[in-house]
Length: 182
Image (cartoon, rainbow, N blue to C red):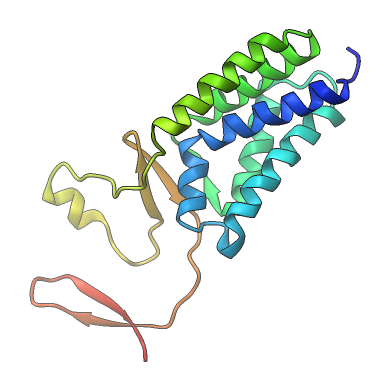
């Protein structure tokens, strides 16, 4: 297929931005600073990187797009996406790109409008994963486990946390309290 015209390329960029801005996993990563001090800038850069990936590669398959987005999340936000949303995000971007290629711009604009309405309805908030019983609470240890947040009941894991000097104190109830050294 022919490359996208300049105006169509801009519309596709808007579409990618709308998809990524309504993706709870990315928003949690940004809101919680998984990408460091420049998390918001990384999310904005990700829009351009994904758009350019489509422009530079002919006939991308959904699994290739999934891998690319997964690599971006891993490399830029130290986040492994395992909540099942990655295929949906990749599929949505692939469909919008195909619609742009086929000059079905009205459909793309409508989808962007729906995504913007969804975004303004409310962003996902990071909440600790709810434990069904105390045995699950006890299974969560501070010795190297991944930090977790919940998105619609699915866990989002941050791979590594920055090392911090800490001291451990044993409390009466058997829990270990971790505090920074002064």
